[in-house]
Length: 329
Ligand code: ATP
Ligand code: MG
Image (cartoon, rainbow, N blue to C red; front, side):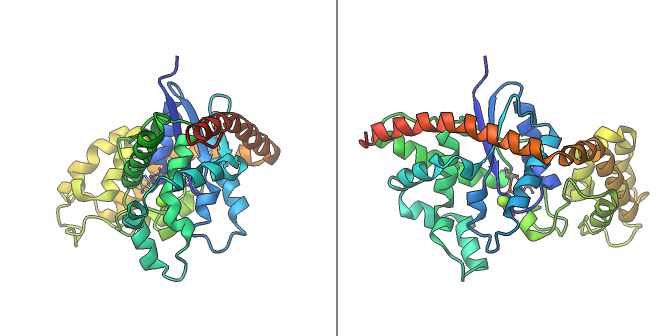
């Protein structure tokens, strides 16, 4: 007997990075034991900001490879591409009828995107949270593994659900977020979030050399100017990442880092080199599995087609119920 239903999605705007992995994918994999899991590559969401879509199909495949190599098991879980189940567009339209406009114009990420791209403020961008809510509730999911950055959106999903249920009766569960132990990874440039659209990330599938090169650029404890200054590991993102990677691959080395940093016995350059080596060691089995999977593109297509078929069966049932409640049937 499963504990409930999980849904989560990610935008195919690039490869998955260690922030995605630590904040979300780790849970995608772990939850498969106890939940019925549905993982979606949300290509329609990508269209809200992507001006050039020629990379979309390639990105979808890269994301599917990342997820499979990380341990999503297509036998147990449904993995599919959002636009392959067109019922989402229909539910999105219905949910738009009960979601007040003011809730959407207030969303901080909407305001930020308007500031950053004033020439591309489209209706889809405003409706993003309605589409996200529709994704989750089309499958009546109750649990949503996401990074901390998504909590405000999930709260809005809950409000959208409550409003719909209060008008038309209890149709959807109010989904809850499920966070990992490290729910927010800071960007290599020190900005608040590692993000593929900010180019401040370490992708999972890059080479060992590229990983070492990227880690070298990581922002560290700003109060440590010279090598002899004592460091503050609790304020350093590199130390947080040691806690995620070094602790499992080189546990004895991890034990020494905090002490050596505080005593200025290890400099930031060496500390980052060790982190790069840990990430490479940690991701070695992932990278090997991914390379093998990439040799057989036909299998990937089959997995995504099978996922869409299974997702569509659930989606159709939910839609029938929604239409009945709304008086459309
Ligand atoms: P984009 O810049 O295109 O929005 P992204 O890097 O934010 O990309 P998403 O595809 O939006 O990645 O997010 C996929 C999942 O990974 C979401 O659940 C999100 O909360 C989580 N996630 C993204 N970035 C981080 C991060 N820095 N730390 C923890 N979790 C993250
Ligand atoms: Mg994002």
